[in-house]
Length: 263
Image 1 (cartoon, rainbow, N blue to C red):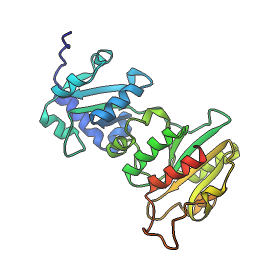
Image 2: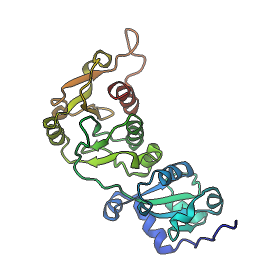
Image 3: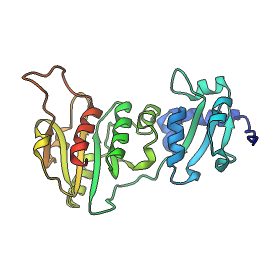
Image 4: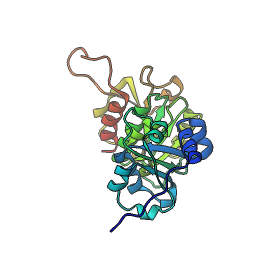
């Protein structure tokens, strides 16, 4: 069956989508940009509502590879190499780019008696943020809460690293992570924090139904105020008498601890 032709991307739409590379425009438009065949395909498959796709921009090759585009009628455009150079945040654009509506945010409230949440305290690398979001989704977290200083989870690199998992769980931000954690503790949550002065994470055989894992800044760890709230401080011990490397990557540490807390 012959594929219906798609209209060319207008200059006005190109300019609007390109501006989503800046956080202030993502916030004002409540949109975020995703690129690459794999990331966009996974996001399209996991959309809670087709209306959350704002625009899908393809080159001729990508248009021939993606199926099910008919359900997004009126939101698909064709673009050339120069257009993708403006849109893409990578050095080698794949000819696939899409703008999605941000999932509804707001103050996190547990949906059930058994809840697992990941909180990020000043995690500054967007690649780490995206990887932690994807890992949290794998281990069944209800939400990822981003505290002050944490990289924007809708940054292009974060979105690539999350590899299509953005719609799989709640993503919330808070200007005061300590205040949010105190509120959740009153709701019965146990706060666990990754810390160098903690106890071997494997020594905690039983976890309560409601728990929060806090991951801190890549260089400085968790802030003093947030760490003071921790009901459990978790240490990932190194092998041997002396560590072969200075530290673990934040997203790797998060994955190890998530597998234990909610595995």
